[in-house]
Image 1 (spheres, helix red, strand yellow):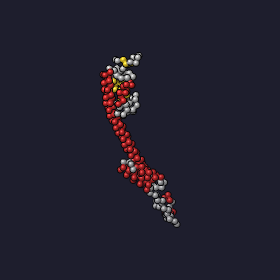
Image 2 (cartoon, one colour):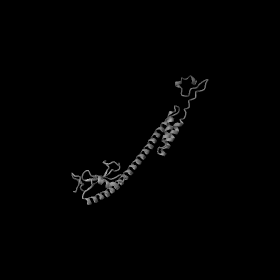
Image 3 (cartoon, one colour):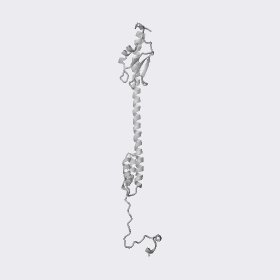
Image 4 (cartoon, one colour):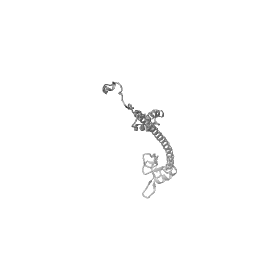
Length: 204
């Protein structure tokens, strides 16, 4: 009879006498992993922006000890790729917006510099008229008194520097700080007024 044959020589299933055959344990289905994989695939339709939600579902599927986790692992990997894709798109958009703002700022500064150069040219014309009448350029104090009504594109006074020849008309520039690299300047032709020992003006 079959039950007298040693187990290692039997081809058919063993016959149990007196009790029922033990039922094979049924593996539970990992629904979290299934839905994580499904959502991660669908997230690419949103260019990866739905991937973080799919990643959370897939990670929850990876935490399940019962049931297969292959779908959860695949969903986790795809969700990470989708999250990276969405992140790169956001970073690119932020960088482009920043670059656009910088371009606009440069264009605005260029227009302000041109406006300032026009204002300096008008101020220089007034100094030329003074030189034609007096025969010399005014000293620093008198020259700056003349420049009070002249302002640059940033509503800051145009300064008259007459410490040495040639004299300079100077705008503080975009940073609104004098004597920095972005100052807008123009040389003024002509000799400066000079004082003799008695404090009288020496005509050139």
